[in-house]
Image 1 (cartoon, helix red, strand yellow):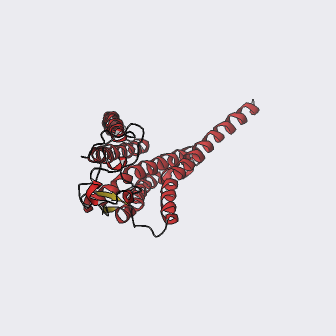
Image 2 (cartoon, rainbow, N blue to C red):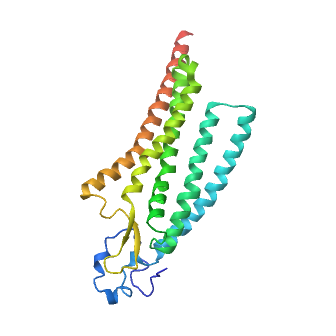
Length: 251
């Protein structure tokens, strides 16, 4: 672990240690080890990252394990579609808790990537897999509630629809996370060959391609599920309001 000491900027600069933006600043191989940019050394940003992820991991583990156990007990006595979907949501959150968060903690502690290229690609896949799965399962829950309230007559085959939606959520998470295994890889510093990092460097032809990939991921992971949730529950609220108003007019 390289630690930033006696640097005037160490307390003020918090940068992502996975970027290669400052790699070209260390041009002298002989002096590079003693003049590493602050983002290539263990600094306050890494300490903060470790502390935050550690706290989040503990609370998330306790909360999601509790929810999962309660849902499993309830499912034995009173099985329902919504309980099944909530179980998958808890599992998705636990994947984030026990795969992504420990990796982020270890990565911040070591600063550089020391686990090799294969693990870089595998862990990059799981960094997004749980998040995609959680978002897609939330979409499934919203769609299920939409059909339950607005289209109850189409509930005859709802059990099969529920299974298909859950399968699609898992498959979608795999498909959307798969590119991570292609674009992330281990790169060695051009001058400090002992310094390695798990990055997307050289994976995109132009910065525009990288921007498109990043924006697409944000849309699929956040914007699309949010749109589905808003549409589903807004439609439900409107239907409830419409029926309530009709009953009021009928009196």
